[in-house]
Length: 116
Image 1: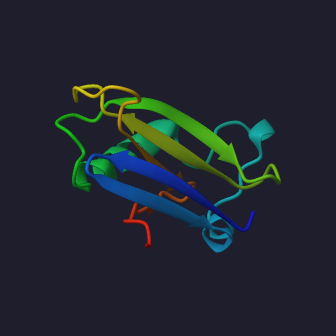
Image 2: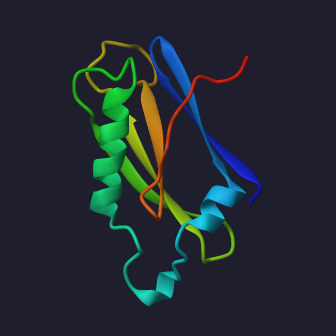
């Protein structure tokens, strides 16, 4: 894994969260066959919710629609992606959403406006 980017859209704002190889390698290792991950999913959700609430355009209430574990490809380094979906805005088409990345050491990757 060199670098992964997660894009978010909370009208009228857009964000990108970039996870680097160095950040992932600095976080604790977890083998999926060894029980629970170093960071509990509930803790990742709490940390991500705190970051989400700081983002402009986040709506009134965070609706967490998904928490997923992402394997970086070697079975040792993982991170969470917590997705929030705005189910309250009257939009047509896909609802606005934000992906917040949380590393296994509890580091939250701050979403930033994409470079233009």
